[in-house]
Image (cartoon, rainbow, N blue to C red):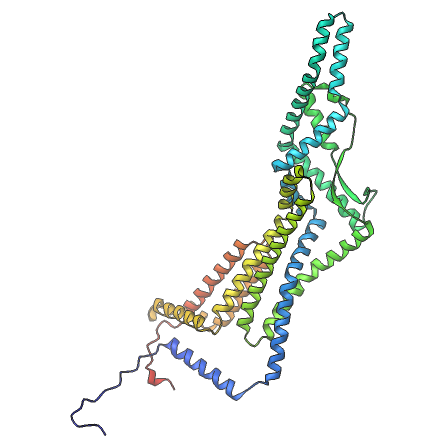
Length: 443
């Protein structure tokens, strides 16, 4: 019993709910009612969850395989892509040094500078030159030969670093790749793979070097006949096996990426909590790309360790250039995975995600103007909010799919643009006025 004269404690007035908060409360009540009235068999849900996990994990395992298959297939079957990959090799200092040494060695295989100098001294002696002068000249011939060798090497080095050599390089590797593709595809017309290997013909470079040296006054290079030195650029252990592998690779590169995408889509669809499954898919994809990047580094170390120390710098530079597009692709998928994981988290049912969405909705409501802000555009958007959301996501996906060379930056730009479009849709799709609703008015 309450004592007389004691003050009566009045309950604090209930805080008013905004329209957004009331809508969220009603939605949660409806979901609770559905869960209570329509229970699902636990066995079925467990099997669906297990199948979803297996499909998503399998997709994450196959994603790096699909990426490597597509990259290798592009390098083998796409001449333009191969040339874009290999063309920067000639700009690398280590590769330029290796080419300079190879071309210089080829020139002096046919031009005996020491022999020419000795013959010249003998000819002078035969013309009556004093013996002591002839002897002095004979001691100078090694120095003369060394100077000529250095002169030729410097000229060839300048040539290798020139734009003209780069154009010849592109032409040579284009021809070599077309020959390799013809051999592997079975369309070779008189193309020979010597010793189960494909060679790059250096004859165009020799001719260009002879032309430059002759213009510089070293006419002795005219003694170099038409020769075809070569360097090995690709291996094919067995031609038949290589052709079979080429066909299989082409099929795998065409099919496997779609298989991976299907595994992810079905796995997310079957999951009990699809937003959580989307987070797992994104993180799994990102992790698989990290593993692929580590595998590339290991392969690089093994390759460089197998070659002589003198060739190691050129080999390392060449490897880095060759895998440029592969690294670009894995970085793109890494960023895509992180974006998917973030999207799944923010759209999920966790307390953090719900609080974030409520905060955004509250800011949009506060930013929205008065009744005058409700024009025909806002009215139309409000009537088609769901379709506009789906359309925005579909357009973003199509833009990514049809990019010629997608990158991580492109993924971030597309994701940012999608967020802006969705924010505009939400902004226009909300009523201009939404007076607070008292808490006791909620049924």
